[in-house]
Length: 182
Image (cartoon, rainbow, N blue to C red; front, side, top):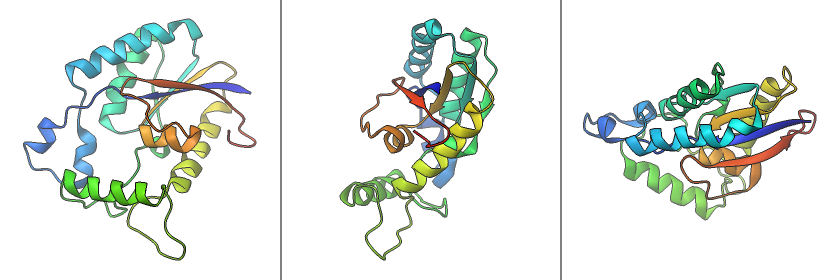
């Protein structure tokens, strides 16, 4: 069984996105703040001792920025997997504001991450996040025996582990069995 370290990206800087009025998925182009970069550097130093052999990241800029810092410090190349992306508050990607995302998130929490019976919602249910993230990890753990670092998002970590409050720059350690996905 492969060791997987699920790592949440550092603190993002949404100001460049918000100041331009970019809606929806454009928010996923937000880089890290200075604190977020420091979090990634500190995390790389902390994780150096595990001797990871593989690094895979969400394609969103805040995760890629974190992965670039960590990968550079640990001399690991960065692979990218779209299925490690963040939760989607609206499957169309056309939400207009942070308020729209907060409203979707509130409904997501009210239903404990799953659609009500027989009623589809525009947000992505936790079970779908889990399914796609497990598939991604299975793809990336199949080719390595050493520990894997997966740079991703809080909701992905929650979907895989049940942990609800992974802080920016935080991580969760798990053994991953590609046969059962956990």
